[in-house]
Length: 127
Image (cartoon, helix red, strand yellow):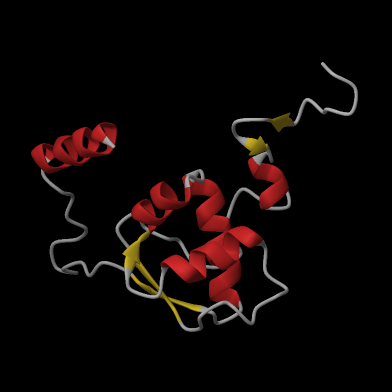
């Protein structure tokens, strides 16, 4: 390795930061459960929120229109667990709104058909 370079730098990918560094070592969000199909909408534009992490500002920028938690993780190229922790922080600060899927209480939670799940997985692999 040439002098002055570090093993956490990659000329193609840029600086590499471990997920636990982004979340401060937390594995679970402070508030909220964040179902994969729950929709997130920002309540602010995020430009004036200088105290936020760059990843949180990216979440606010991406959620100007409703987006699912799974989509958000994919667009931001972050692990789902990391996105959930960051969303919990934003929700706690009142910067986002969550819209959980509605379930029929008399029937209980309904799971999507296996065909739909396979189609989603195949679509994600095609990206």
